[in-house]
Length: 315
Ligand code: TRP
Image 1 (cartoon, helix red, strand yellow):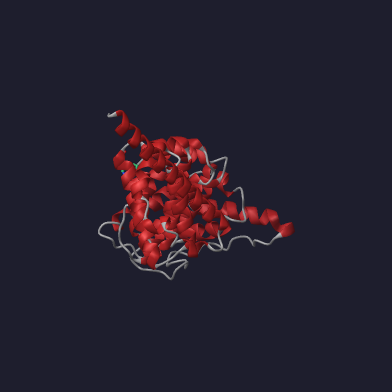
Image 2 (cartoon, helix red, strand yellow):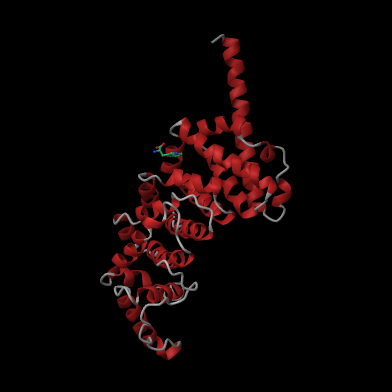
């Protein structure tokens, strides 16, 4: 592990036996055989690195890889072993690029398990996301760590993408939100986008919205990070990130108490139209922003009105 092999190389271990040729068409069965061979190679420490690489390359074209991974003997255990084996390199941060690439191949396979409708529930019931949280808790800005965080967020992103309330329920019982907020504060543009997407998906769930708005600490923790991302976007614009930020604000504005807090808390550059120049090509996000400002203005008028009434009545 301390001898970085070239990225995606096979390393110095004994070379694997040549897999059966993986032709398309009539040779579909050969291809399946080679997948099964790689699955069995996962349980052999000497063959595992190559098997991880080959299987992760196939995951997009081979749709039933996830159930095969889940049900084949030792595969998931091997992936978890890969994850746990790099914990010692997280703190102090000494993870090599080769080790990061290798574990990210394992994470890519777990992502297919998280995405697949047949295996998603098993994945949650086995609490597998928790094994990734130590990766999200790292702060090193070097590439191996950036890549590790981004790939781990990708697994959680794949989970929330399906809009299942069980997924959100599971995540809310863990500490995923502060971990996402951390990445939204200090990650690369891409990890920020994935982390914001995850928070957006949590907010879009009714239970998620009430969870985040349940205490002012939670609301302000989220609001503060959204606000600082908006500020930094003024220097380095990213439309895809802005879109998720605005969607998060819009959803918060659908919660009455949160909306009242947004009156004084929404960043000025969203209110005064100076952000609009970035949204020329994105009518959907422009519409969300208008809706957001409408909700906040309505809440503002309602509270002013209430204030005047209180004044008149003398309460
Ligand atoms: N356990 C913390 C809580 O329940 C988790 C948390 C920290 C959190 N920061 C948050 C949850 C921000 C939602 C939003 O408050």
